[in-house]
Image (cartoon, rainbow, N blue to C red; front, side):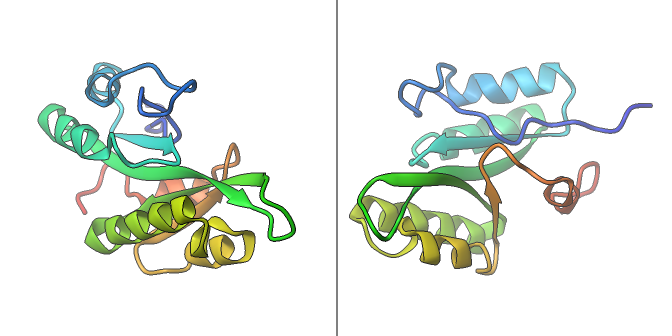
Length: 146
């Protein structure tokens, strides 16, 4: 039997110019593919996360909520990289909300040094965009109740 697989980096229509699916459609599609979990990592926003979580619960797919944030280099105002932050549990959700707010304000986690340390907060995991590690896939607990 093949190892379980889940898409952890996906964009919904809430990621303007990058995603087209409604968050609920992503959950339904993951269930159709018999994936144990599905991730939503919209760009610079958590606006589709609640709809996605509810849809995942309805179809029996474990939701993995994250955000793909543009990180500003301290020397200029241009985004120099993107990091994906994943939240686990209520503390993780609160941390994601704080990160997105800070990024939109142009303070705190929206800058390089702060963003790199933000992943060390309880309930948060950071990954470089496009380079997700197997370690994170293992920590979300495929096939296990958490």
